[in-house]
Image (tube, rainbow, N blue to C red; front, side):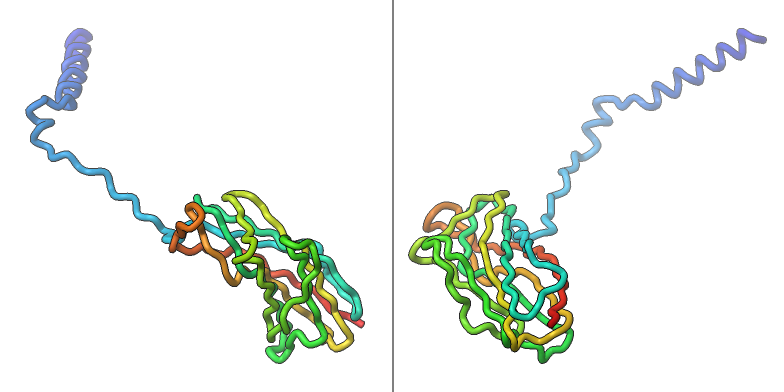
Length: 195
């Protein structure tokens, strides 16, 4: 009886192995499937990461704060920024940047330059785009030094600051542009203005 059970087990195992083997004739009958085309979920050239450091949680009226505006992009192209912005907003829509003044250390001249009249919520700095463009290679953190002065007319209370890049181009090489965009990723910083 033992030999019969052993023989039946060997026969069952052999038939299972034979059933799983595909003959060459069967393999040719199955149509080959192409691998699925890779669909990009990001039609952009890459991401543009922005950050600011040096902004305290509390600022006093009359105080000037030195901040560093950092930026880095992940495309394969060279980033040429044209405008760096700080978006400032209070809890009330009417809180304009009255009383604030902003400056940037111009990277081409090494001199402090004032921002144009800040709009409600946005203060931009035009960079030397045409005369001496700044070019930043991929995956490199570049920075701009900025000053924010909170004058006597600045609204008291809660504020938010978010870095933004209002204008830029991607260059494959000088004179050859990449028409794609960058996905901007930037945090929102909260701070208080007090007397």
